[in-house]
Amino acid sequence: MADRAVEAAAQRMRGGSGDPVIADLNKALAPDRVHTDGAERSLLSHDSSVIDGGGAGPVCYPISTEEVVAIMKIAARHDRAVVPRGAGTGLAGGAIPMGGPIVIALTKMNEILSVDIDDRVAWVGPGVINLDLSKHLRPLGYHFAPDPSSQQVCTIGGNMANNAGGPHCLAYGVTNAHIRAMEVVLPSGRTAILGGLDAEPAGLDLRGVFVGSEGTIGIATKIAVAITKNPPAVRTLLLSFSDMHHAAQTVSDVVAAGIVPAAMEVMDQRITQAVENFVGAGYPTDAAAVLLAEVDGLPGGIAVDAERIAEIGRANHATNVKVAQSEQERMLLWKGRKTAFGAIAQIAPDYYLHDTVVPRAKLAEVLDQIYEIAERHDLIVMNVFHAGDGNLHPLLLFDARRPGVLDRVHAAGAEIITASLDAGGVLSGEHGIGIEKQKFMDRLYTDDDLDHQNRLRQAFDPTCRTNPGKVLPTGHSCADIQQLKRIPAGVWG
Image (cartoon, rainbow, N blue to C red; front, side, top):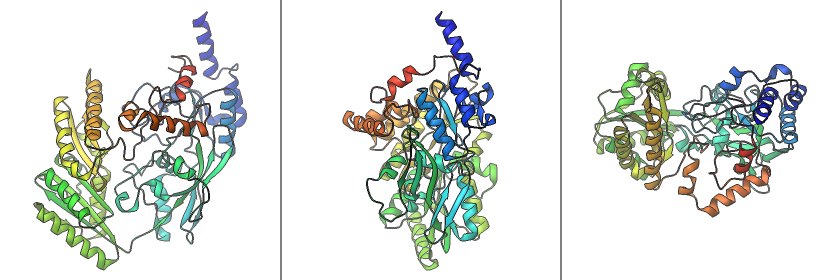
């Protein structure tokens, strides 16, 4: 009897005429934007992480706030969980649907709605591609400052959900510093405007609460982003070192000297060699580490800062200091950095990209531990990271077809997180917590901290149906019981 009930539920959930959820969704949206086929659900059951076990229910592609409202009201009426999703470039499992929820894919809400140069703000849909926004603004002399390495494909909505960073966030700040307001559909189906365009919006900073909430308290349908004027001059340096410790010390010394570059990125020898073989960016393949540093602003000021960075590098045994002599050369250096993750496909078919933050003074120490951890687990590791703010991104390379390799990858990843926390670091600089780092949250926060985070979530989502099973660890989340109520295991498998 139980087996027949589960099978009947499965038939309904796969789009059968008896499924009231599918029927209601098809009334609210055009039927060609409600997908229940296995291929579509399988595709949207994963993100760019190595986390497995997701299972999508019906996949909806709304094109307006009104349609998102309708979906949320249907979900509430049928007590169904919902998971918002952008381009799927996340690396912590935040957008992986668990237990057959309604997936709300926002990629069709991709219009740049307005640009106000006087107020330096643009209203955009959550599905707008990060780089597309900057391309749109370039003729006007502006850009969107947060620039994740995945900016060619990641969406503004996803950037906001994870409070994404990027190489140029050292001076300009991560996504939170560039979001002024957003229109949000709450789990109840009500809409609200959080934040505002005034310099000091009245009331609580609910905008700040929403940014980085990983889709657990609502869905943004329109976003007001701050746009940044393009700098009058830019200078980019590439410093080479025979030892990673020298590169790390240079980063600390530059900041200690009162210089705040637009970016300071470090790459180790393995990733540098892969990048150079991939794009020919002009990186030295014999250096143990390279530091890509960029300063921008008025021509006179950046000339002084660039020379000072070069001096600090030489004082820390830089073997070579190269200054880009043209915009083409500068862009090629950055192309190497931005395509680093693609370059490693020459070496292995799969990788696990981590994201922790450690104090700058502990960079070299933690990097030594990362190399040791990878060697002990018989894995190749490459390091490329936002050195200026201590945001590490070790890449563990592997071939998923090899038996048992994923167990070693996850074990090594857990040790890297532990080493970062032991050094006084934090769990994430920009990828978020998602599923990947849930079990480590109680290492960073007390029970009271986690309780208050849960209370905050419940203030927005009392029934905990929005992206359940994410961020807060088991035992501290109101979503725990909701997870048990989801669709029977195997229905969406």
